[in-house]
Image 1 (cartoon, rainbow, N blue to C red):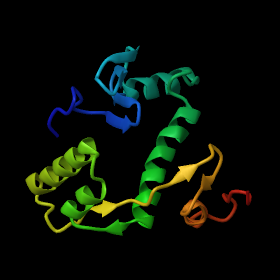
Image 2: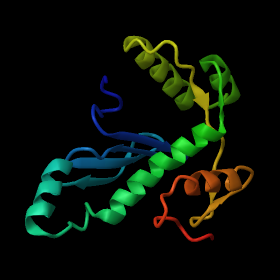
Image 3: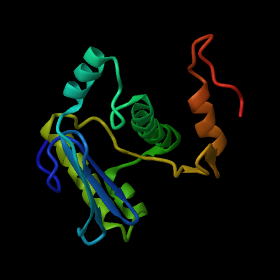
Amino acid sequence: MPNYRGVTIGNVIEYEGGSLLGGHGASCKIVDKDGKLVKEFKGGQNHIHNFFEACLNGKQSALHNAANGHYSAALAHIGAHALSLGKELPAEQIKASLKGRAEVADAVDRMMAHFEANGIGAIKPGLGAPLTTDGKKFTGEFGAAATKLDREHYREGHTLPNA
């Protein structure tokens, strides 16, 4: 992947107030909408080093522990739920439905260029359903359907209680 906003391997998470950039290596930063630094996080190791250190010492670090792994995985699951509940649309339709959001149009263009560069032309992009949460459960129009996706694939003995 090419360098995007200073990140070659890691995350670029854009939200209403700015962006989180990095997170896969030894540093990460948060910037506001204008790109001004809000906070920077620095570490000394990557994930593999932290994993082996935890195995050898029998201790999890405060930064790289099971709870943080859970939250990281939860972000991916939320995105997958949104796509599962959304619909497949041509890229131009997705961009048109999100008019006024130049950063989203740019992301769609970069995704389509990535597909083309890697010979993935047969895949049509999807527009995810808007998911909302109260911090404990999914809410809103797609809340029940997203909750069902969370709960329908557990093995016997590994189920979640009904909430």
